[in-house]
Image (tube, rainbow, N blue to C red):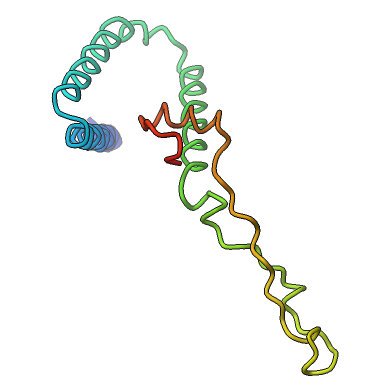
Length: 151
């Protein structure tokens, strides 16, 4: 085994470990908030479906062209990554600072105490209420949230 092969295996192992910790966190959070019986039944069902998919589609993966597989996986990562970044708190308009109109903030060259010479603070835009309802419901579906107002 070459050094690059060892690095590749180690990277894949660490990425799988991160995903396992994330899945365990979701299961623990769901178990604490909604009850352990349904959580463990759901986790077990997910493991059975995953095992069935691996058994059925694993050998067929050798016949899929690698370039097509990379394109499909890359497109899915891009779509879900954009959805995740759009739903993050920093990207929401209601969390962003109000736009500053620099021209309105500049003092004018008129009399020193006139109202026109003082810097005016622009009024902030109206608070945005959130994501469109259709997108919010699809996002709630993927995030596992029951309330559509949790964006």
